[in-house]
Image (cartoon, rainbow, N blue to C red; front, side):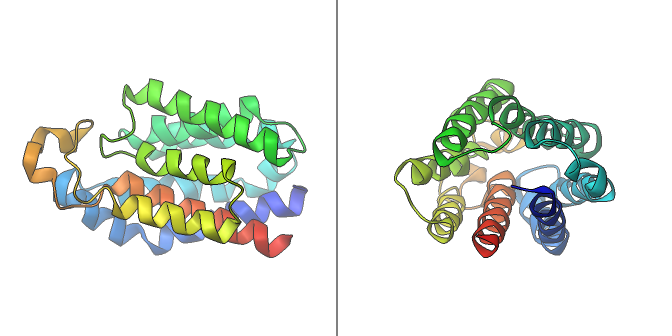
Length: 200
């Protein structure tokens, strides 16, 4: 990805989160603190404000810087988790990644998020989207197919019982609601995959 691509990705993801901030807040109000949309919007607006600076860095450094910015600005539980995702991805990815490197780096980043959140797939968190997306990459799916996988995976959190995060305090009452972190992850996956396919 060249500098223009990275800046475009930053702008598109920030626009996507901003456009869905109210939806994410509504989801979080049902089973969480109710601040996920606002927190995510604040974090990605902070990243957008430094898009030109981030875009001048090599991809690994840019991802680590974005992750650090998200940790500092998103707040709540989501800041450390989304920040860890980007920082771990930056640590593992090469400056000009091929698909194999991307898959390996993404896998390591998912492991880092799981360790940070002390969670695993099936507990109604962002991992329930990240893992199917990684599986889709391994299966050679196209960007648009992977975006569909992410959306379906977020939908699949609705019948789950939350076992991590604020929603876990609700027990069975968490069933029937989509996890806000899973939804925001799916939104980001679609924004990134559609942008990259459009630039290819």
